[in-house]
Image 1 (cartoon, rainbow, N blue to C red):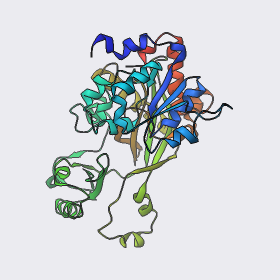
Image 2: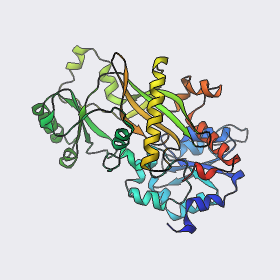
Image 3: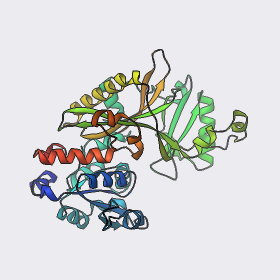
Image 4: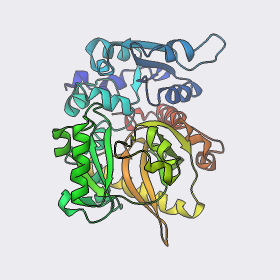
Length: 379
């Protein structure tokens, strides 16, 4: 990247009083846009053609001040956000790009991590170099960060022959590249039988099975700790907590044990996300939660300076005690997907009122702009 095309050089040439907050039209875009409008920013959504009406019609900004999307740009594929003409338009609008999971997933279908970091010339809120750590195939991935932070995560099992207890097998789905086909097993024999069944049905592929991840299955309720690291204030915030709703898995879990047996061996649980539910913690676990967040931020800063900027989430199982403890099974290194975290009380404890993740991002941009420190929150 030349100095002339550097995102921070572009940022320095912006009119800081006319910033546009931009994001991919999926995942958490409306949360980002509403938060941006509350802080007085313009908003622009890059939407996939055929999915643009959500933003262009139903939630567009209206003359009466309602709605939250000022402008919608329809493209054929989300990866087109890296096209030269699209970036030129965003730069002309003094845009700050807020990456979400859909950006990471869909842009990766056509571009390498190196290209996404190098060729995105629009200033990005947060760390662009940390996004790749969500990919478990990366050498310095989220597991490496958790290890460096000394945070407990499910123990990895090297091969099916090493299975010695309840084990979760994570295999890339054969038909949906960004989803995985999960199954539980307790022995190497059962693991191979189950893998063979899924292979025969086309749910997984031989290449996917070759990259399968085996890890201990920790019994306990799940909770997502949605944090925010503020470079401007120099503090860690817990914005909210939630848990996931996942398609047929949730339906199966609602059945009685006798009815679950009727599903038979053909049943393949899907962990495809369908939504979120706000969920609170016992107050006695907050100290432990903040300790995890602080340690993770320190590890990220050491591994990929400047480290965390803005929102991230540690997705946990609460393991039984005594004492109860968190086991982190996944990490989100950008805005999490739940707009409902504001319906838990934690942001209000800090700010005096409930605040969504999208609004907290916009507030950080406002604080950085007013302090002349936009370069401290954008990369």
